[in-house]
Image (cartoon, rainbow, N blue to C red; front, side):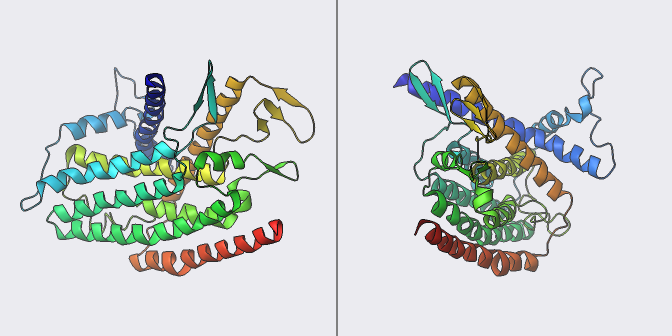
Length: 361
């Protein structure tokens, strides 16, 4: 029993170490990728013993700066809720990663370790519960700041999250109908089957419309450009206008954690998770014949590497979208969510039902 707990703790430490470091590096990626896209140099001033390291020291400099800033609570604000809000946002975003499988299984001696921090049979429902709870941090930040602009940002965030969570949830019903499970690990394993012997039955193959709807809705959940109305720097500054120091840093970090989370979810639901094309339990089996035999440990490591590269690709894609599209107006945001994406997601579920009836009937 103690050994099993220690193994889970070690797995959780490895997962969250990777997530937090990737989120931290995102602050550098945002500066450098935007600089490359706009033909600029980007952040390169922070040095250590004369080495600039392409600006990689800037995230560390940011942390030092935020730790040394004054922790300010506005007069008339609710100090307890003002302090609690950023921790709620970060906590629920991080808690969601517990249900995401980063690999299949790892064999150590006679023990089989499932590479998922928490084995949850209804992991999909758990993820939506955690995403919904994260909205409370933003709403409390706006309410507790005693600032009309912060309150307006919190209300914008609440209505935006409610609108797009409905669409995001409906977009995934088609996957549940197709794979017949709410368990993310089993859903990823089901994506290891092949159509016509060579085309992986990943979520994107069986639910292409749901993929585009999900990614759009999930990006709106992150509250980043082009869906950053709750912040709106040129309009209201946002729900964190009265925050400073590491409280602001937690809100800032939560945005990047949610970006990594959306990349992990898109990989898990639509791009096979840890599945690699033609990689089975004993090695590669190619549709044109032949294969490569591999040890179980090598297969597991290749699965983790496959998952990592897919996540990094989506992180790059979301950052490119962030620096390409302009911000929507608020009425455009609501119209897109309720009048376009919502009907499309419902129609996709109905169409999926008809297709499954034809295939399995």
